[in-house]
Length: 180
Image 1 (cartoon, rainbow, N blue to C red):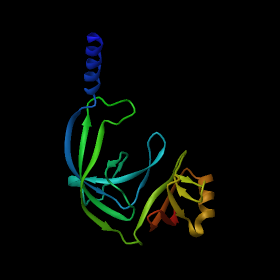
Image 2 (image 1 turned 90 degrees about the horizontal axis):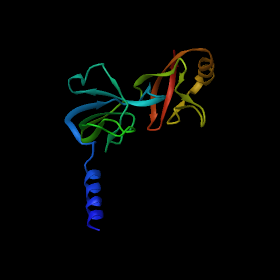
Image 3 (image 1 turned 90 degrees about the vertical axis):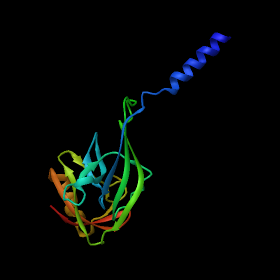
């Protein structure tokens, strides 16, 4: 009985010791742009657009493929955040090696509704437009294509690269105002 008890305790201790221990941690300031970008990971995805520390306020934005625990993104706002970034030494195969945790929302700036932004709608074989329930970006953001729906359909069939210019309508939808 004592052997079984010792064996169970040893297994418990080994399970409590994880290879996912944080090996590095830093606090960074991030700016999150007012719209999500289309990008390619293993498949087409929507990403946040971010700037870090000294790049904040420049014209250089990076796709951010991860999530920020505790952060509730709403389109149409530019956010300045304080974020703790933890790096893990040996994460599980299906986990990332970094975890981002919101420490503080430093500021939130509303973007005027007429602010325009561009998104790739098609890059070669990667199409970011879905039509399961009207026009959407990857079944997540509704698109009002206004008078450009027929043109968009034609371009999706016949061109390898399509860029759309948009503006915000509300939190869940954007309006297509020009196609390239």
